[in-house]
Length: 205
Length: 65
Image (cartoon, rainbow over all chains, first blue to last red; front, side, top):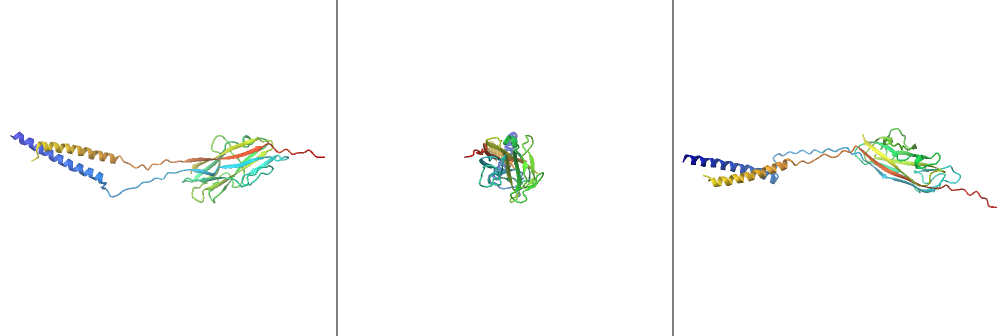
């Protein structure tokens, strides 16, 4: 008789514990389902990482078709002009590479080409040069070069070429530069469709 | 007085609900919004120069009489 009483008491305790667990579980599930917030504060943490990014908005300088004039030893083609001196090339409107810093950080800008004057044009004393200037004021702080001055291209295999901007800024209205190209084509140059690639490399400051 | 049968039913319900609430808690605990984004420290772009070179124009030096 006493044992039965104890058993009953034990089941009573188990039942009450089970009821308590049911209530707690329903409470927890209810909170999750309704989205009720236990804490009323929140923190939004956003990190904006550096993005170095440049883009050739104009990426093709096409001098077209022509030849060196008879009696002339060379033809000079400057992309910011509209025709050759000493040759028959005419491209009607000035042409330039336009390079924009489209990232969110100032960058160091280097420039190189795949070929130099000899491999690109051939012949006797060819020249293959470029000149840089700001399209938008204060876009490029020059390093080893001066604006609007012709320099031989850098076709070195290793590295990223000549540093043309110590700082190429990303702020709108100050993030655009122009690169002109000059070719001196000798009368004994290679003939045919000649092409080369300019590569600009930006490294975040 | 709660009978033994009712107590057993209550225990079963309690176990089921406790399992569900635990599962909800674990799932919500592991939900994190990632704010990590890749960082790009360098970039490059390229442009092309093209010219078609024909043989030089030869001057006609023959003179007509």
